[in-house]
Length: 143
Image (cartoon, rainbow, N blue to C red; front, side, top):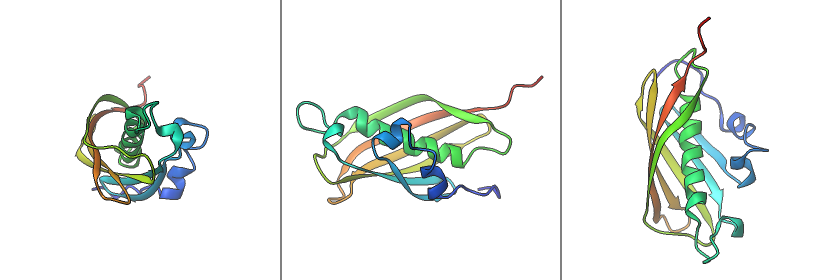
């Protein structure tokens, strides 16, 4: 998409410790123009009291993956971004194994980005959730 160097998975993963994505075990596994792939092991802390995956855990994985995708694809000179809208459709669950999220940028504009993500159970390949979010690109304040 652009000639801006993309951060590596290692560089992005180094940003996660001490913040929610690091605490819940999210790890970036692939970075490319307009796309991002991350994974998260399913742990008991990710489950709701009913024993099934808590929706917030799935949303955290999807929003983080889309957010890091946005970060890696910010226009030159942009300062940061923030999520302004998100939507999830839950189609399944997981109680063990690993979740994998593949996020794809659908609109990578100067002021907004729109990302779609699919969260799957790595071992079975079954879709757990479909996710879409909009990100607002933040620019330095002019003096």
